[in-house]
Image 1 (cartoon, rainbow, N blue to C red):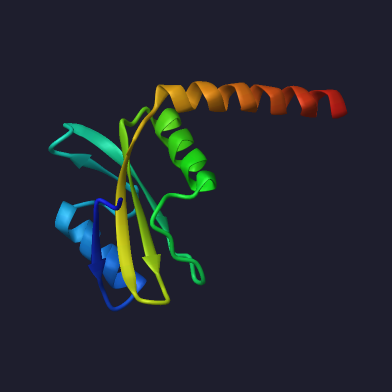
Image 2: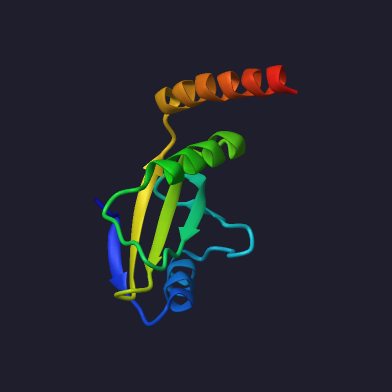
Length: 117
């Protein structure tokens, strides 16, 4: 379930509106969340043909990795959908369980690559 959805004219307007309301520096793609008292990561996607009501697994992996690397507790995942010009925003929290599972997969992948080269 999205954190909230808004209707805007285009993806630039939607992202500008989001960043203006939260006083975010768009160049850093992070901001300080007053409620969490933490900086959080922002991930923006603008799929042209697809619209979804969930975060696809490939994006969840990217989001969790970004939070792990930046030591952030949350990420706002923003999607602008071209077809109906809507924006959906999900708040995703860092998951140690997800990261443990992902770390095991990454280690297996690295080991496979080492054996091939």
